[in-house]
Length: 287
Image (cartoon, rainbow, N blue to C red):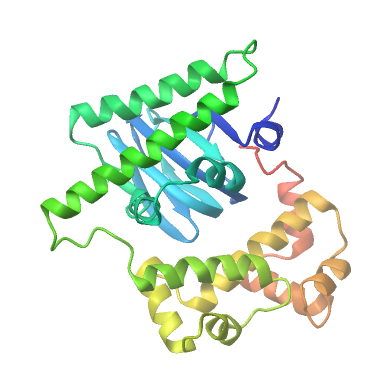
């Protein structure tokens, strides 16, 4: 059973992430993940924001739509649990909203306390054990229960840290919320909408403020982010669907095939046909 099939069937997939298994291609996904890194270092770009993962860190992210590996050390290893939105919602029923928000307030956390590291490591190991029990009719429920404990534990640690250092800025700001919503709106609308003004209006803020937020959070202007996600989707269409450039131009709201070609050359430095010939075709989970 491959990654996609397991997500569809169980709502989650547990696997080991190494330098050899991380895709070098931009990947379009719609999942949530928690990972523990026990060796090496990696720099990933998640939803246009770069994050550094190194030994002793815990990664917890939601609504990862676009990801790409920028750097991976040869000794990198992390255990990662990827879950669907439905699985996340099901296991978090009854957990106070304050705790849900706290659990994902800091995507990357260095776990300096050996006891905390042991707790999260044991969570992952128990998930691995229950996931391997082919004879159990309730392994998914057990994994869900453990994942629920992970959310609560992450929240309790974050809330404790806030109480210990109330002046520390450990949570997301409104600007972070705007940025996350911006990425989600692009994913939903970029086939038809390519301009910053549309997304600023959706967020009820000015285009200038949206660009300032994007620059602060990712180092890129809002228009650059829209174009980057747009070209990622177009590349995916070229390599996976086999659609003609004329059809892609129509579906992505370009005036014509020539306009799409100009945009593609501007973003990649080559024509769509040259790109397809060089890259061939690949599965979105290929390395």
